[in-house]
Length: 443
Image (cartoon, rainbow, N blue to C red):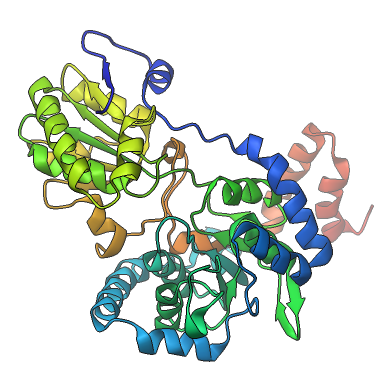
């Protein structure tokens, strides 16, 4: 079912490894041509464009762009008690983890009378995007909202696509489970807007029959290639968390791993999207064969058989055979997976050697699904190899560090000659004069 890349007996450099490994095609640059006129239309025409785009791209014109408060309440009232309980536990665990991520201001005394404080300040307003295509993601509401709230963001809004099959009070609005999750978290500003147009709406703001969506400073949340392209296009006007691509899992396993566990975890990620990537890295050809047998059976039995099968057979998925776990670590560090499971002997020691991953799941009892919902960790993570330079969503994503410099006269006088010397070395004499003017009044 999955293709095999045999790296046994080969020692490749990191760049060669990256090129040899399975990876989804995700050409954000090519999508910019589609996204640019959408964003321009939202900029120029505001709410009118958003209604039309909803009708054309999502197949339905929402009754209003902002979801009324009574619809949010109705969604929470109608929520299955079991789902509510699960969401509440997910929120509780996420708050535990994200509360501990809060940063404290740090003051360093450089000299007597001279100090620098790094002050952490939340962004003023954020737009949180929650996808609503092949699946429903109330968990993404939790993962976006909780760290923003724990960071102290004063104003936040959620956008999610309107649903064509909505009924009753929810017709034309985002999925009621998403609305219920917003209500549980106390989010009152929710918009029935999806795709690239949602990113543009947050970036430019709009007004709709007296309801004003103010522009945001930062947009976070996963989405399809058009959401990623809109983020790239509008980056600078807004801050972004990442250009998220298709989801991916890599599993580093040896012959101690249970092939049924490995197969089930590969299927779980393939369930997201036909472009989802599922990659097994192992030094055991026997394990690889047994996983393949388990996949054949599990794919035939799973609900989304066609979607899962397409993902597992795609160029982005496959088994990578390596000589040993050291070589396997080289592979997973080069791959830089969004989600990495380590199912080996002494998994904790192996996991400690991982440098590049969005999140690492250690041992047989920490599947990625746990992190998706209830580990307390965040599931908005870097994809497409970006984990080698980017982090997942956290409280830090919503904070800015501001340096506050406080020097008295004596502290400045003591260092003045160094400032003047460096200013002259850079041929910027006025920089030095801005210091000396304070002591002799000369230009």
